[in-house]
Image (cartoon, rainbow, N blue to C red; front, top):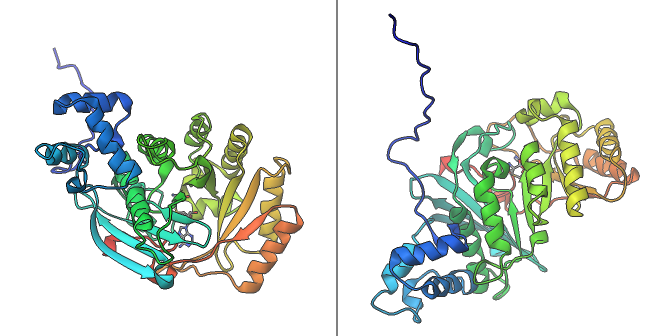
Length: 375
Ligand code: SAH
């Protein structure tokens, strides 16, 4: 008798010595907070006090939490607010109103966030993964591959840090409020869905359960992972969805956004339209303008036709991003006259169109330039 053949179990072992980021208050929902209090042998209101410090006062230093008993302050705050982000470097541009921070995570992974203050708002651009697996050839992050997903708290802590910088007046313009969050840093947010939606929940929950931000001021940007876009539409949190399209035709998009071979232009645009229909939120189509690659006048017409085929009820607008060239890339930004003509054609076909500013490009802090590996 021969041994029965056994299929090898498919075990995906994480690299040694890594494991998960420490558990943090921002990872916990209401039930988990209760359990955490029990673990600490403390009443639930102690956790609520810490939550008030973290989410409402943007305070992370236990010494400042004077309403906690002095004897147990460090133990309680230490257990609920472990350090997640170790600041490696801050770079400033635009007179200090753009600040890029490089963070080292507990396992040595490096990620970046960018805080941008405008006259009427302050936006933080956060990372959701260390690296990215989507391999878009024009994007700096895409070149290094994916290291790992970030936890909800690792995402939230970037926002809390930005909100604290605003509140403390560390950004020129006096003390202010962080109003907007964009998931346009490193990573593909829809490939780390659970942690990202957890972070979104914490952002919109009123203090002391969360940061009390408005869902419409949160933008989730995606290459177009269709099942996740559909799921996002069912969450009942009307965040703004941005779809990184970059080409209206599959032939070119297969090259620029390789995941297009799985989810085609027609499928991703349909999912974006569905999102707009369900949430009543206008979807943003991101289109990085690359000279002589995707910026031809006929492609503007084609883009308008693709979008208009879902109706012209204002469900979509196009946001053109001047390409930020990344080192060694063969792509460069469009000529001004080509960009103007592209805009003109979209507008002529009824598509609201904006051109994004290139804040922070001189500190490699603009869209697609975040590449922590070279730090
Ligand atoms: N993975 C998400 C978030 C990425 S960054 C996504 O793809 O949407 C946010 C935007 O910056 C995306 O639209 C991305 O395609 C764009 N981008 C990437 N590299 C760029 C570059 N070098 N110049 C301009 N925009 C870029």
